[in-house]
Image (cartoon, rainbow, N blue to C red; front, side, top):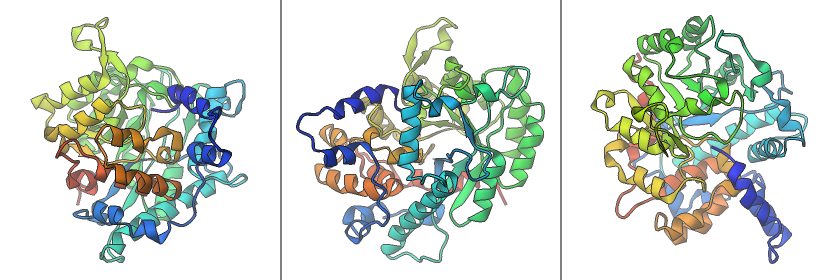
Length: 420
């Protein structure tokens, strides 16, 4: 998902012979613009992005909470993220915090304040086209993130990349219900996993978030069955990363992100959202045996999407699909697959849209997926509001005459399905 392969290219930027220091700052680091200028807020591209979109049905389905635990949040990260002996993880962590415009000494608090500011601005641009600012508006779905656990169901803090407690995600969502919904994260190997799930749902959790390779989960294990039965009974979606993971190491269960491993949850009747549509990396084609060939992860996701048995409970989110480490062919396939569109959900993967080196609108324009005239506008928006940048960019994407439909952005409907 993140920066390992990009850092080689990003580091090269620092030795570009003709680049000025100010240009490099603009390329590498988020300047954290505090107020979206009116010429951007009212720009025709922004106004056009909201055409046909009901802000009250717009829930960003993929937004991470981060921090360092300085605000009593209970958040903790691996010490490697703060050690120069682990330069990749150290640099990644610094880019995360810069992307979210955190302030030293109040990282946790400033992270949430920035999110509130960005979603308020996003909603302001929606009301600027003539909507009613008093009506329900766009929200962020905040992810908790579970610790790693071993197969015996014991927590493994020493092997945990980062941990955002459910209690903290719940607290933030309850303190600002006009801005946030929350997504719990519960390890299925926990001895109290089912009880924890029921408690979280009773407190308004809209879904469960997993990152199997980092958390130490094998989604195809029978150990998950009781948890799957409870998810299906409670009609709670599982948002699960699939494909290669580049953000963090954790337990290092790299084969655990294979999309085909989600069949066990699907067969149990769980509504599964495959994060990023498994749009990066390769996995073993388990249908040809445990030593089968490696194929692009998105091909395995496509195989599941084509399975008639999963038409009603397999979905994908489109977070991170516009990052520079996704291939143009993959992005074209997602746009072109009209048969997928009714089963895709928008998400930003915040704070990643604020990590400037991860995105290149010029590459998308060169590939014909974006009008060249949109590039400078989008690039300027990103400096002020990465959430708006991500939204407007996706609304501008096209392959030939095909674009992503409005329905992908009406995600609230999915999470309230069957709810009273």
